[in-house]
Length: 194
Image (cartoon, rainbow, N blue to C red; front, side, top):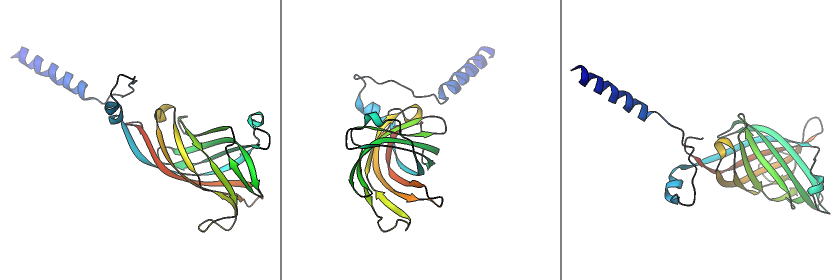
């Protein structure tokens, strides 16, 4: 009877340990079936709201003749982030007063969460002078452009996705130009990482 009780307890302990949640940080190679890799991913909605500040750019050497460097760093909130910071460095080609196309040959763009995990993105389009319906009357220019997720670090490793920006430039009460951003789309991430 004592041997049976010991066996039952041992099996219960093994069963309990086997049922514990384990991290799924597998590394896939070309031999791993794509269907299995896809089953380890999850597609979710992405909603980011943040305000940016123009800063002195340090990547001027990356910009071609006829373009100029822009650096914008911001903060806000978003799904899968809680608090986020944003960094955008790119080159702009002026196309008219208050307007320009970007990026022109260079872009470094990412979001970072409170743990330091980064989500790398690429965004391209054009800034237009003025505003469209639904934007506040203090908006001075706007940009509504597609973005693509290019992976990331930490919980964003292997991430992909896409969406659209809804952004504008404005002059704040202190007379300083800032940006307002609302990005919506989808993100595909490893299960358990979101």
